[in-house]
Length: 126
Image (cartoon, rainbow, N blue to C red; front, side):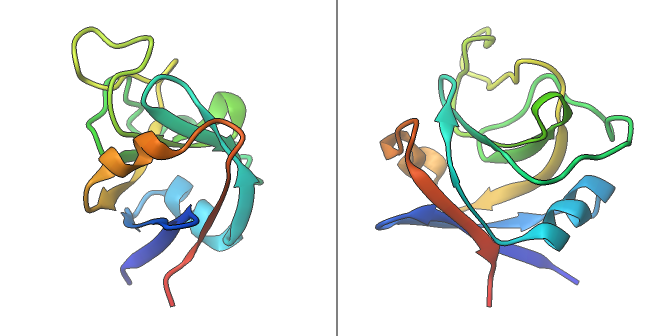
């Protein structure tokens, strides 16, 4: 089963596909969310009600633009759309390894218009 989610705020709406990891399934099972987000460089993140007692699943400390990760340190959903303060060059780097749980569909550059403190929604595509 393909797990498609919709996320955004106001007129900024994107879709993403979640992969088949335990972390992605746990996130899917707890949707929808409406949360205030934070930014860290070109990363959008927010805590979610998912606490996994799992090791990182293929933890990544370098990701690609458009990747979505679960950061166990902060129980956070992370969307990478460019360099972060940890980056060397243009590749996004999380503060510490994340489990990749999905990928944005479409151009993630629109996320540059979302500021810390903005309320965003994430839900299952219907």
